[in-house]
Length: 158
Image 1 (cartoon, rainbow, N blue to C red):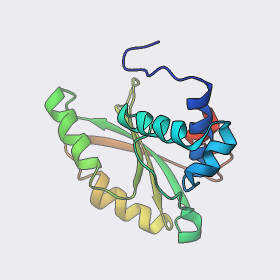
Image 2: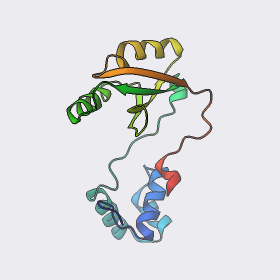
Image 3: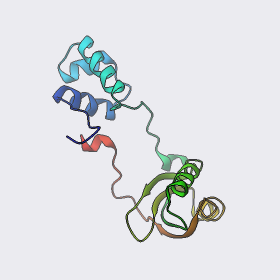
Image 4: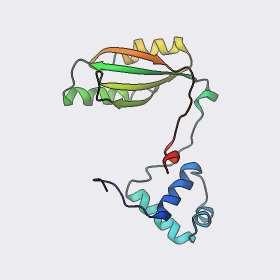
């Protein structure tokens, strides 16, 4: 087990499997599904929340139904990669709602961003007005996704 990792038994894993697919399930139904009674199921849920395994509950929104079916991946190179610059860039990324994911990468570039917009015209505005204006951005390269073959959630890893 790695540092910070939480030990989980089969009941904990079963809870995570069910709630990752059905976050609004009633505790009594969850208990039946995993083979425990309501009280120990509630205690396990609370423990998983307190230990930070469960960090929240949210609705999964289909972005395509909202007209957000243009996906671009953006390589970002920074002019400075000292800790203060990275913190500044990271904080600024959080303020751009079109950036769906942001990952620091060990490569010839520094960050990989997943950006979701309505269309190419909207993406060009986001790139030019928001991403290029982020602190310490030196250059970007864009890769436009033609089709999503597989997008996974944590439920797929359980």
